[in-house]
Length: 66
Image (tube, rainbow, N blue to C red; front, top):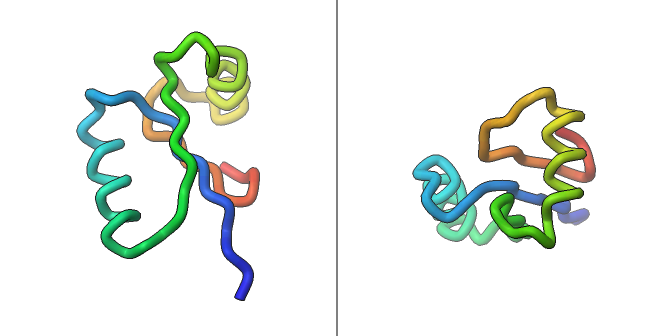
């Protein structure tokens, strides 16, 4: 079986981000979490938000697709 590569863009205080990650954890779905508030993620976050035409989170990429 091929596993999807999932990236979740969010921030710690976001209730929707927390709910999403809790669901993924509950169902043993692997994902990478990118904190949009960290300076080290600023460039990547900016690109993703521009591509997705949004400034709200969570943003979910599956196999590099919004």
